[in-house]
Length: 103
Image 1 (cartoon, rainbow, N blue to C red):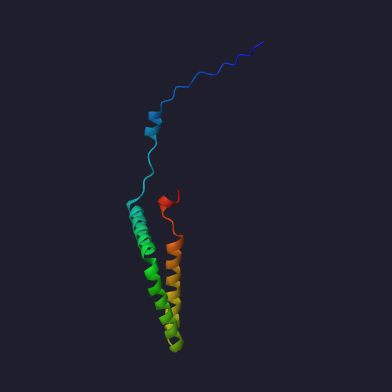
Image 2 (tube, rainbow, N blue to C red):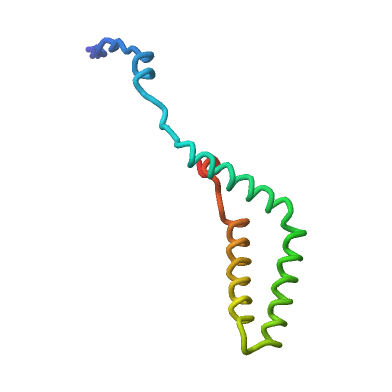
């Protein structure tokens, strides 16, 4: 007539011992110091980016003009180097995410 389903007894679990066995992952001091410097640099650049952008692009323009005027010496290499530095700065400002932001 009726089916009686008996559930198993609750298993006694000691959660405090399980929590004590787990140790938080250790972070090296060098890595945390490097991450804090990167976070500080990115925060500073993001806050000052509207002003820094004008100076950086003005520098690129002046290096480009210098490259056009002095075609026989190292001005081309300097201009390419400045372009790479500006590109890496832009990518750092817009695409870098710190460890605490990735979660």
